[in-house]
Amino acid sequence: MEIKIVLMAMLSGLDSGLGKERNTAMLDAPIFKQFTVTGLVVHLGVSSDGAMLSVVVDDESTVTLLIFDIHMFADQLSAPTPLLTYQIASGNVSLLDLAWNPGLSSLLALCLSNGSMSILDVTDTLKVVSTLPPGSDATCLSWSPKGKKLMVGKVKGSCVQYSHDLKEEKQWSAPGILTLPHDGLSFCFLDAS
Image (tube, rainbow, N blue to C red):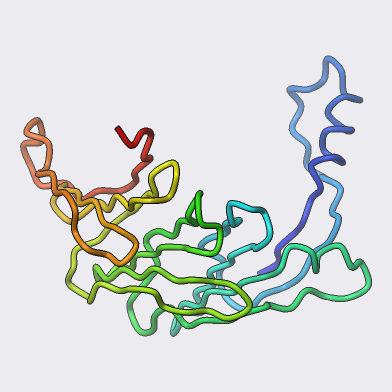
């Protein structure tokens, strides 16, 4: 699959030049750089300091996390290569959610379709900080605004707040207004109060 890099400055310049035609869809955005990865891209994300790009690729037998140093995209002459590669899962397991920590830019959390979760520390190496095993029922996650807590949606609609080492701190039952079981699909942690 091809990944295309577009500079925001290029888009802003085009936007300001369009004037009243801003409602027209742009079908040929100016490509700064493009490269190919093997498999289907299922997630893209940028660390909170803007230094790393995470790309998760599913090639039907494995799910792989590729970490790119954003600075390498400035070199127009060479194709970007991953700084780090990490196999997240294999078999019938897929990525459900991945989130970079907004306060500690090297941390990212992910949850998989088997209910497991991991927190990874990504620097010039990749270290697994903590994990919850398959069957932990994680379906989605979101860091608190300062990145001190991790809120995790669970199967059947409950949610749990964890610390960085995945120690459970608080737990909430599914909302009473739900008449049938519902899994958490997405969270946005708005306030830590």
